[in-house]
Amino acid sequence: MTLIKSISGIRGTIGGQPGEGLSPIDVVRFTSAYGMWLKASLNKPKTTVVVGRDARISGEMVKNLVIGALQGVGIDVIHLGLATTPTTELGVINYKADGGIIITASHNPKQWNALKLLNNRGEFLNAEEGARVLEIADRQLFEYCDVDAIGKVSDRPDFLRNHIDAVLAMELVDVEAIRKAGFKVAVDAVNSVGGLAIPALLKALGVKQVVELYCEPTGLFPHNPEPLPEHLTEIAGVVKKEKADVGFVVDPDVDRLAIINEDGSMFGEEYTLVAVADYILSHQPGNSVSNLSSTRALRDVTEAHGGNYYAAAVGEVNVVAKMQLVKAVIGGEGNGGVIYPACHSGRDALVGIALFLSHLAKSGVKCSDLRKKYPTYFMSKNKIELTPGVDVDLILKQIEAKYNTEKVTTIDGVKIDFADSWVHLRKSNTEPIIRIYSEAKSELQAKQLANDIIEVIHKMV
Image 1 (cartoon, rainbow, N blue to C red):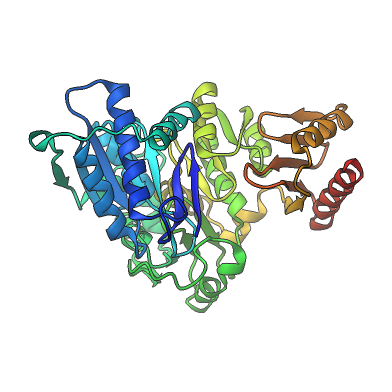
Image 2 (image 1 turned 180 degrees about the vertical axis):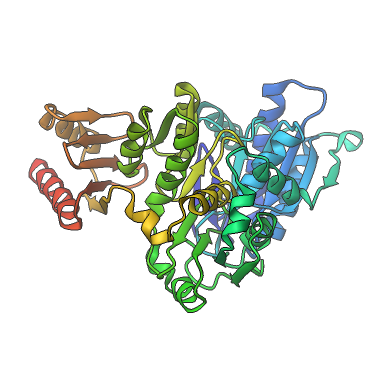
C-alpha cells in the first residue's frame, strides 16, 4: 500500500493500515486538516467548499468521507457529483466558494485515489498553504463543531452545463467554423467523467458525428488511463477505421488532452499545447509559459508571434503562478495540459478541444498536416538510480558548475539549454534517483544527450 503526502494534496492506494494506504481514517484526517486551515485563513462566519469527483470505483466511498468531514468542521458543501477537475475548479469560481476538493488520482490506475485541494480562486494550493495543511494533519489540530453548526450540503449535479457554456463563451472558440467543417470526431474517455463531458461539449460545438469509445463513467478503466502513445493503440485504430478527422483522448479527470491524427498517428501530447498556443497567439499576441520539462516548440511558436516564452518549475501551481507574474495569455504543461486564463487558471481538456477544433477548422488542412507545421523535437525520459547516501544535491551543483558556459536554470533541479537541445535533471524527493529529460532535433540525439549526462554523473559518483 502507498500513501503520498504532498503540498498539493494526499494520494494513495485504497485500503491498508491507516498511514500506509489511503484509508478512510486518512481521508477524514486530511479533509479535516484542509477544513481547519481554510477556516483559520479566511476567518469568516461561514465557509463553503465545492466537491467533485471522477468516476473511479472508490470515488463514492471517498466522497462520503470528504463531505462528512467537511460538515463535521462546520463547512457547507456544494456537491457537483461526477465532475472533471476543471469543472470543479470553475465551480469554486462560479459559486464564489472558499475552496474546493477534487477527488481524483488523475492518470493513476484504479486502485489509486487522491484529494486535490483548491483555494478560493479555484487554483491548487501553493507550497506554504499545502505545508500548513500537512502540519495540521500531522499534529491532528482538529476541532469539530457541535450539532447546531454542522455544515449543510447542496447538490449541483448539472454544473457541467455551466462549464460547457463557459467554453462556448470564449471569444476565440468559433462554433460556426467548427459546425461548417463537418468534423467526425472519435473520443476515448477511459470510462470516467470525460465520457459525460466530451460528447456533450462536441454536440454543443456543432459536431454531429461522434464515435464514442469507453464513454460510460463506470470507473473500470479498459487500459492504462495515462494518455501516452503506447496506451492509445485502440483509439488510433478506431480513428482510421471510422475515417474520423481527429481523435481526442482524456485522462480520468479530464485535465490532459491527447490528440490522434486522421491517419491514426499521434499528434503528440507535447504538441497539444503548442497547437493551441499557435492559434491563441495568432489572434491575441502575448507571452506563454510551460514547465521546464516541456518541449522547446512552444518557445519557437511564441517567439514567431512576437511574444516572450517563460519557463516555470514543474507542477501546475508553479506554471499558473508564473503565468500570472508575466501576464501570459496561454500556458500549460507538455503532458497535454492547456491553461487558458480567459476561461480559468487550470488545465482543461474541454478548453483545449474547443480551441483546437477552432484552429483545425480555420486552417482548412488535415490534422496530420497541421502537426507538420510545427518544429519537430524528440524527447527522451530517463532516470539514474543511485546508492543510498549519495548526495544528490551535490551532484546537481557539480553538473551546474560543469556546464556553466551554457544557459543553466536552477529553479527546479538543473536544466541546461544548448543551441539545439536541452537536458533537465530533477531529483526525487523520496528516493536516491535523478530523473533526466532531454530533447533534441532527433530521437538519437535526445537519447545520446541523456546518456552523456548519465555517464558524467557516474564519473562524479
